[in-house]
Image (cartoon, rainbow, N blue to C red):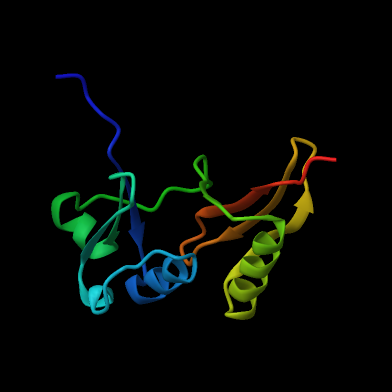
Length: 131
């Protein structure tokens, strides 16, 4: 069997706040999941996102320390440029960190970057209308 990319896992310091953030981005994470130490969510394309508390990670890797910096972004495609602005505003007004406010990128997309509660970059984007 050839390995198949199937899941992105993230370690979280506050499961409830993290799931609130991703629910606001449209993920229908079941109610009550915020009290679990491990949560998985399957997207429509069968790809999975998973979140584990620091305590869960340290239960099998006692020497785990949070990484510094970031090298991976999750990106959410929005229906149109207006939705990028709407999502950015809703999330920043809810107290989540907006890193780069929406702009029209030279590669032809409306783009914005937020940080989830653990500082992971989360991009919002939508194609700009053709002239």
